[in-house]
Length: 429
Image (cartoon, rainbow, N blue to C red; front, side):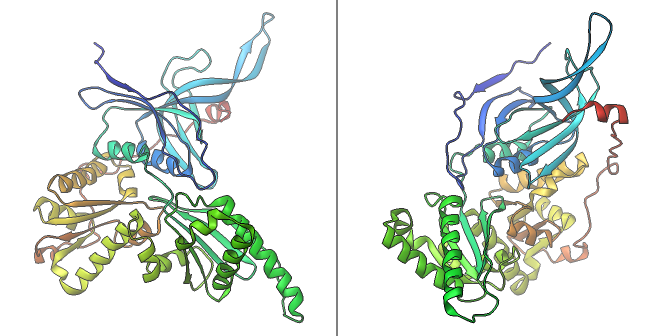
């Protein structure tokens, strides 16, 4: 007997019209869950951040339904077989997931699990989900972390929080830091004279460089949404550019730049490469500018942890087994977990991480889920991806190795899923 579904239908979908750097929420088109927690949610990704949320939401064993393109064979009246490419709807039982951040795409591989006129049951197929593709996710149980991922993904208040422009003479790298991503969005390269033989040639080149950086900020940073724009680099170029930009904005009457003047901050960075983001987020001046952002919340939680390690080492725990023991004793006041742990291939192990997060939150403690794609998440990964600050000392945790894993009650699940050569060439996408 079919289970009754409680179904919520979202308003009809309207395409997003946000400008570059504008992170709108993922569209929740409809959802329906039964009393046992199973059900489906239909979504549409609008921005790169949405794809990351989707990647964390789908697990092996779920079903994914979407439009796809596939080569199908059609037999003519004379008995001849023709191959044509058709756009069809397919539902696959997910066996493998691949996240492509550079291409803004997620690939779900598996076997067709619904009757189709064109594709036989059990045939292998890979669904490529890109921005603005409609996708329906089916789960036997939407647990605590999956529901939280769904809520975060469809949060209308989500936005890019901090823009960072790392620049030195001739080179500028643009990054947007959201609640979960540190995304490279633009790059400017201008050839500069090797030696300042004549100041005229250098001055012309630097102005040309400044103009391109200025255009980059206008085109790739939504100043209505970001709380702070950090201009950083190893020399004085960032300070000179900030002065030049404000003068140019005044001369041209660029009200958008002038009204957000206080949002621009110049800071020192040792280089203009991605690794400079970590040192920038620790900069006191930058921290004041991003005081109310999610990135700052996570950094403060990490700072609090390291401060406690120094002052009261018996009031911290890190590593899966130590944290689990502390959670069971009701000792955790702040729990920090990397989202990568919730993608564990072993269902039993993943369930234990979910239970730790859920139990900690139910006890009134704070739970921070760090993105492994963010600077703060990469720092937490050095602590095995999970750490906690304790309400009271637990010196006995020293007897548990910080790198001790969770018992999985049955070993790692083997994924022996491999499409045959015939099936692989069958799939067009």
